[in-house]
Image 1 (cartoon, helix red, strand yellow):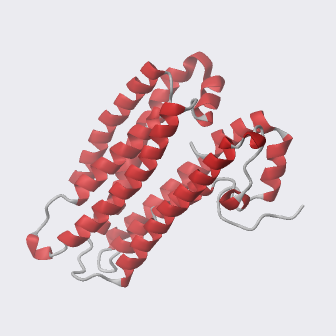
Image 2 (cartoon, one colour):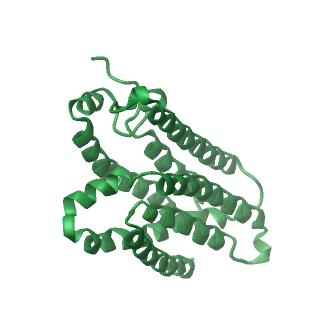
Image 3 (cartoon, rainbow, N blue to C red):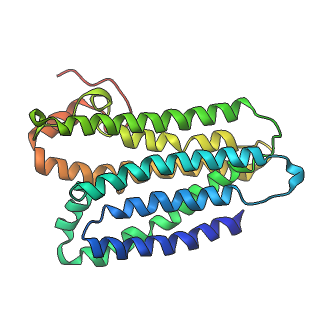
Length: 264
């Protein structure tokens, strides 16, 4: 398993280096997210399917876990790819580009390459889930699948609600606070972090203490989205463009978790 994780790290280093070259050539850093999502999905699904001892009798679980990874990767990666190809640069990267100025490309190398070890950590959870030794389908498997499917669906719903809001000319310059966006300022990030809980649910084995490392995946994704490249740069950009309107939104609505809005 360690060898597989290191192999994923090496592959993702190459993929993310290519992402830096591609985003520099196109002038749109949003392509980084496309490379990461498709790259992580391809590497982790392939690793989940790597042959193991036939006597374990769990190839069906390997296939199930690989299918879950592919579902997530194709849904998110395709959505982001279409958005990047047809629209302006993501406001997060546009804000970072403005803040870093001429140093943008040199600093982006570090920001992009660090995503390779993140993929390797996420892969550990996927590998443990794929190699869970129980021979039969358990309630943990059902719960893990349910968590991932609901998360993919919730993230897709949040994205579609935001897309419809932006397409309405009457909403120009306004803050989206309808649907899931009335309960969370970033419901898409909430479901993305929740999604990675599926693999610990499937993969934790009381007889294998190391299987608890699967919990690093949802914890790491939450930290990255809440305190790293997710919420902070996006909210900084929204405050620049929406000002007090967005500040009032911040006062009413939870930053990440789905929670009833405060009454003001």
